[in-house]
Image (cartoon, rainbow, N blue to C red):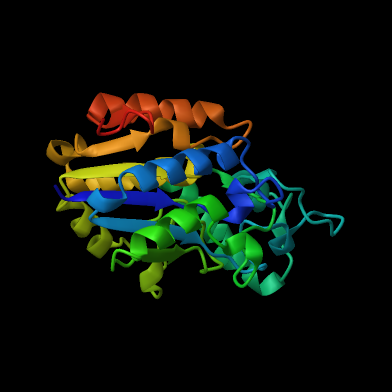
Length: 263
């Protein structure tokens, strides 16, 4: 059987208690996923791990924006198209204003999340960008079987959020890394079974799986299995995670506990 794992953003900043955007429960999620990977090690055909990878200067980080008093927004501030159009928030660098205005407009037109300002996280070159230790140990053990993890980076384009691992919220036509990753999707579609995990359920996991499912078509969605006790939502956004589960299980996605998968 062609069994593939897609593990979304299992990084220290999300899954370690000292992380800059720690998701409560993600540390235990990582331990359960480690145990699951170890149990199925000899049967795994491929492992794909996505890595959120940001610059400090990013459209969704505080440094990018200021209010009328020159103060940067606090983490978790939401910035709407109306906020930008009426000057409640403007770009720290005046030369960025026009493009940022177009961006928040595009988010609204595309029915994406309203722009959320996050604590700087998963900065390129930082420890927070690394895979959290339990999962790192498990995948290195799998690579001892003469295999190689497929690492997929996302998020380094400062002009767009990149929740989904297979495309940015507003793809940049000049940056292929922000556009639909058809190569990864096609590899996954060849699998007999795809185990899905990672952080956070409410955002990057939800968006990635929705985008892949839309490309697959309904006939292939039932090969996708979310390992439900290895992923958690960002506090305050739990409703997004629940809505995702409701929507995707209605479309045919399966769910399973880590201890019950392929038992």
